[in-house]
Length: 87
Figure: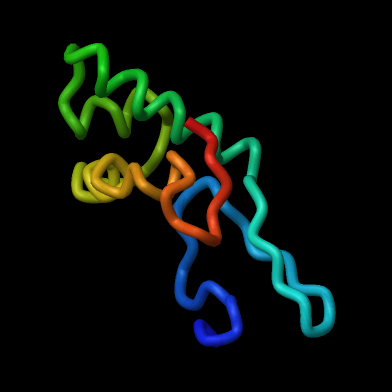
């Protein structure tokens, strides 16, 4: 799949895969992306731990999930070919 330009595996939070026949498109999920942006804003403030960020944005996830989102900023900056820039 990757040879033909398909993104395989699970997409990062904030993106969704739309498949129409043989055409696969990765699009921004606006509702999830609003949460991702809030996560980055809270982290930049320096006032919140990873656990507090998860609680603040209403995600039922552990700190490792928040860390994973923050550690994968290239997906949100448009540095990965398949993903549009959103932050």
